[in-house]
Length: 64
Image (tube, rainbow, N blue to C red):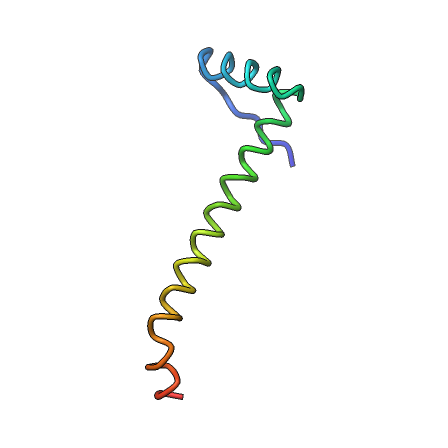
């Protein structure tokens, strides 16, 4: 999927600079940043759900 996005000149400059420092195209850095954001949000949800399950494990076992 191709999603065109509009960046401010300042963001474009930062993206190009960071990509150059990493030795990758700016488009790849943008894609990797989106992947990282989505994975982090998914991981945060999993961790929060696991904390709730762990905290209430005894209650769930009694209700089962």
